[in-house]
Image (cartoon, rainbow, N blue to C red):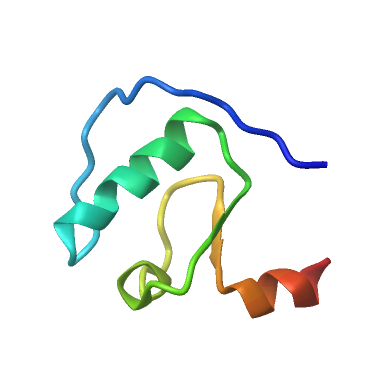
Length: 65
């Protein structure tokens, strides 16, 4: 079942090499997301983040289902 949630962004974060990708991380934090599914290599390269969500490729997400 798909769910959508509108969030208001709070605190700015600056952890991704591509600064435009940081807003995706901010959205995940505000939405209390479990998973960010992406093919973006800059986001996928992030390791050991102190957040409660995983960053997965679409393939890895399907494998984990």
